[in-house]
Length: 75
View 1 (tube, rainbow, N blue to C red):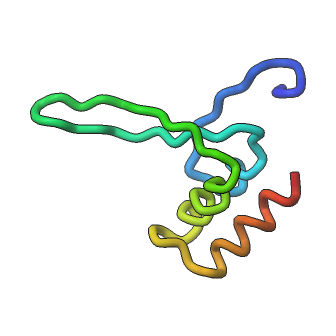
View 2: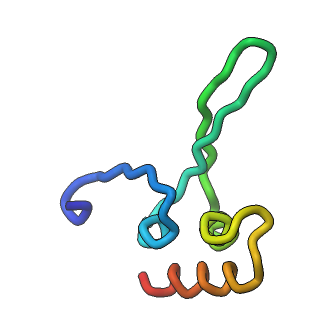
């Protein structure tokens, strides 16, 4: 589907996320009584770290970082 159209996917799956061409980190920001949803573009060097966090938690383990690098390399 994405070869002919723009596709936006929100996922908690590292395997799915690793296939994307562009990544954004979506998070909530709370201050006082207001909560906002924010997005931050993840630059190339941070992709591996964020995908590794999906695999093992924060901070990511060494094996998760290696696995994330391998998943990204499959593209």
